[in-house]
Length: 418
Length: 173
Image 1 (cartoon, helix red, strand yellow):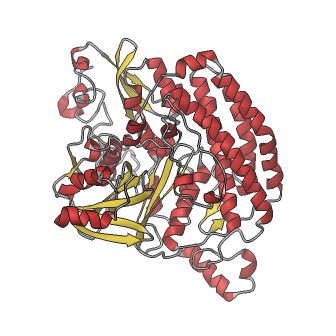
Image 2 (cartoon, chains in turn brown, yellow; image 1 turned 180 degrees about the horizontal axis):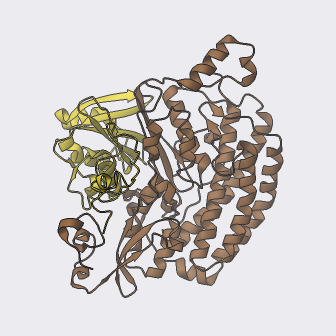
Image 3 (spheres, helix red, strand yellow; image 1 turned 135 degrees about the horizontal axis):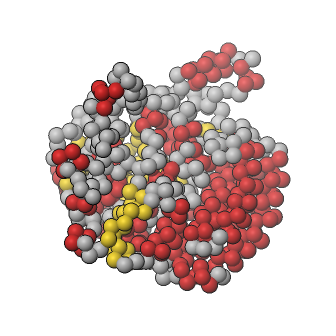
């Protein structure tokens, strides 16, 4: 490929000089090969492009190229009022819509000093854990598919359907739920919710055991994952890995335990840890996390039966009044009008809140200048930071292992690119 | 395990003038640091006994337009030992000296700083791979800035085809 440096200096394809410092000297003499993988490769979990430097089948260096799904969500949120931007958060990590909504609502509530009723807090925990199982199921199905365990995908998506039905039941939407609002929930949980979740609690443990067997007792799978993609505990922290990718290396850090939010401190659960920091350990940590999520959901459902209080704060400066109040109270009409036209004006300040998403630390940085629109919203997304460690994880592995490594850090490119 | 130290007081005692101020809001401590000293301050926070902020959670930037200095570059540090957070902030304007790159302390800063450059136009020195990360390589401007309008691309019709094509030197190959 020839390129005229005058006209094509910014186009990457024609100019290997731009990779200087990223690939070894061998690439310039032709001893090693530069290969482009993606962005439409089926096993890269989305539109991820990876530029590989190969010697034979060995990966000498690996340069992930992201941004294909960049939709300017953070920019768009600056042009909407606080409450209207919640819909944008669902579209970031499309496997964890409830979690994205939760972190944004928690950041708003911290900024406004808004209290959330206990029933809403517990409902948030239950739904966030259901979303975690949903996300881990997709990861398990696709991750297994990458490594030749093709049947997991059909099973995982069958189970996921049950969870999506529950999300549809509570919010009216299967994926983009927008169910969490500042101060609580959009509406109370429907009556059918309890039975539907009980069905999950009854059927899922046996199914998770089955998948555990299909995957972790499959000799081909074990051979392809043990000892692959190793990262030590120190490196994992230095590279900012969080979530199961960090705990697979044996670091006991879970934000639900370290800095509990939304009443997680009242729930009993264990934090599964790996020992070896390889692909296999990251897999078994996530499988074990699904069981712990079921434990949390079970406790949450018991609490929900007793907690029958309000599902949303009654602070009318931030929370719109229910429809029934509008016919009786002039004040309610004024609040309704103000909140749905102008929005609310929070105090000036900057807050950072993080939660334990299915992929790791999901943080929201919110800066307010006192106007009804946020001055700056930034999401610290786990896929973005975890993916930046790929070059470290994939170094000196076979190209076939790279697929498993990408699967093991569980990326969602919508989450990464925002 | 040693006792946790007060990060604000320790930094003022150790670095004196390099600490330009601090804020506390909703229980979150922000320490404003001079750009040229940011690496030393962060290294002290990471390594010193009683501080041990070992995880760089996030780097992001805020545009305070039209205030000067215009940008606030925020580093969110977390200490796994003492379970607490700290925000370091560097105030920066266009034309200032580049901010030293945090990649020498935490490799995770690599992409975060590329994002701050791509979206806000903050320049870093000593960064191993300073390219745009989300936007195309030939993109003009930094979209997250306040003076960058929420984008609408003019539709290319036959009457204005040439005029718009002028802005896209790389579209035709």
